[in-house]
Length: 309
Ligand SMILES: [Fe+2]
Image (cartoon, rainbow, N blue to C red; front, top):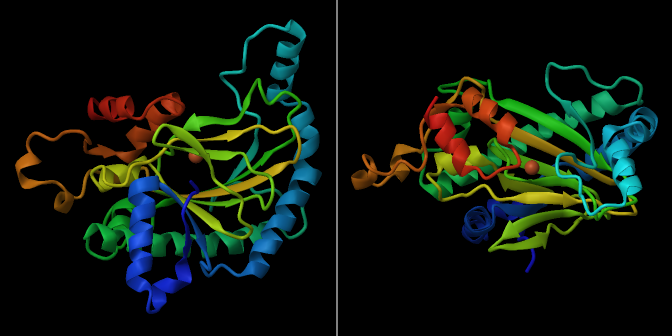
């Protein structure tokens, strides 16, 4: 069993219906799929790989040697017990936003990542339009919901540049502990060779196989709410590995903190409107306050907690 690989360029041709159905299946049955021929130029992706790796070498590698993750692991190895690291990840990460401080020392990093983020945001919006159509929602519905209403451009678009350096004791720690993503649509550009990302399907952890220059799409908790549970956010994790330094660049198209999120009325059965309260109506900023405390726990209590706010 492998995560579906979908040729996004086929949306514009004779195989449109088939491709729409593949994406619907990817969202509904998997919560994860890989897009190829997605329109982001290969040349840009090659530059992204280059500047990210150079950035890690130049600005991060030395820091990681002094990181808490490494220190905690060394302490544990010395103790020789059976304990594992349950509350930390073997990950080096920075987040790029439109308005935060970006690394300055790596030549070409800022320009390349700005160009990449701009292209990727457009791809996210195209993917959301496909979801609208597959769900039977008006074109632009999801984008509008995430942007907090008519014509706004206030969605929270962030990019996490992560590295998972070689780990001497991968049995003691995860690269990234299992979780579902809080937000909307997540677009991941993962390493060409070093795997480690797994998603949970039907109770089984499945590798999200590295596929050079593909973009992995997964849906977050807010798409689950908007689709009234048709597109479930799914659990995923990153295993630490003893060799190879996994590069992983995840961009998330999330709601604005002020956006109100609730199931699309079109997707709630009329007779259920009074009784079905699986998914509450809430302000996304409140959801994030809960998520910050409960990221690595099941999502259902998050929905309950935010309902009570
Ligand atoms: Fe995630």
